Amino acid sequence: MKAPIPILMYHQIDAPPPSGTPLRGMVVSPRAFARQMKLLKLLGYRGLALRELMPYLSGAQRGNVVGITFDDGYRNNLDNALPALHANGFSATCYVVSHALGGTNAWDAQFGVPAKPLMREEDLRAWLDAGMEVGAHSRDHVDLLRCSPEQAHEQIAGCRDDLENALGIEVRHFCYPYGRHNAEHQKLAEAAGYHTATTVQRGRARAGDNLFALPRVLIAQSTHLGHLLLKLKTAYEDKRR
Image 1 (cartoon, one colour):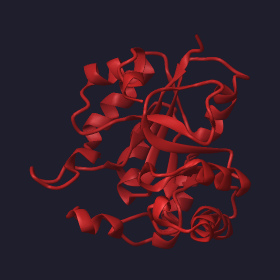
Image 2 (tube, helix red, strand yellow):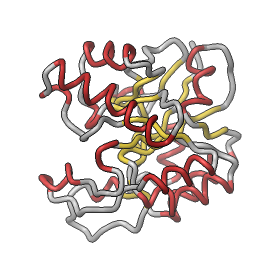
Image 3 (cartoon, helix red, strand yellow):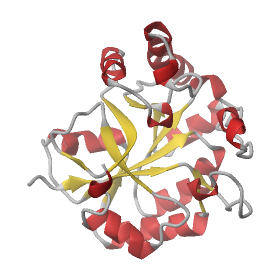
Image 4 (cartoon, one colour):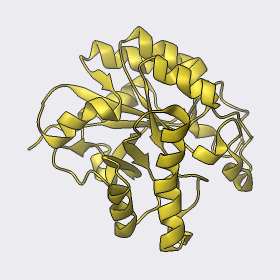
C-alpha cells in the first residue's frame, strides 16, 4: 500500500474565543500549534506547502512528509503560525479569498462567528517573503454548489487571476470553500491552471489520488498531541473519508 501523506487543515491560530462561541473549535492556540509543529519535527516529518508536496503526491518522491494548509487567510496565521513554522524549517500554504483582502471573514457572520482580520496584500507579501505559499480559496468564499457554471468559473479562475495580478506570482493550488464541490468544479479548477484542489473530506492523501479532490486531516482546538499522533500514524482519519 502507498504511504499516507497527511495534509493538515488549520484555520485560525489565535487565542480561542469564549466557550459557546460558534466554530470555536476551529481556533487553535499559538502554544498548541507550536507544540504540534515541534512534534512533527521530532517524529521526523518535513512540513511542506503544496508546491513542495507535489512530487510526493505524484509518486515521484517518497519521504516522511506532511502538508500544512490554512484556510481563509487570517492575519493571525502570519502573526502566530509563521514563527513556529520557521522554528522547525517548515513551509505552508495559505488559501486566500481574493475579494476579501484586508477584510474579515464576513461569510461566517450568518453562523454567529466573530469577525477576525484577514491578511492584506502587504501581509501576503510578508508571508511569501518568509518562504510560504499563497493558494486560492475563491473570490468571495461562496458555496460553489449554489453557483451556476458561469459563476463557479468566475469564483475559481477569477481568484487565481486576482492573486496573480496583485502579488506577481503563480498561484497553483485551490481549496473549495466549505469543501463543497462536485466533479464539474474539479474540472473547472484543472482548466483554470491549478495543480491541485483540496477538500474538507477527512483522510490522509496518497500518491496517485485525484489531485483535484485531495482529503485533509482536520486539526481543531481539541486536537491534543496524542490525538495528532493517531491522525498521522493510524487509519483514524482514513475511516472518516
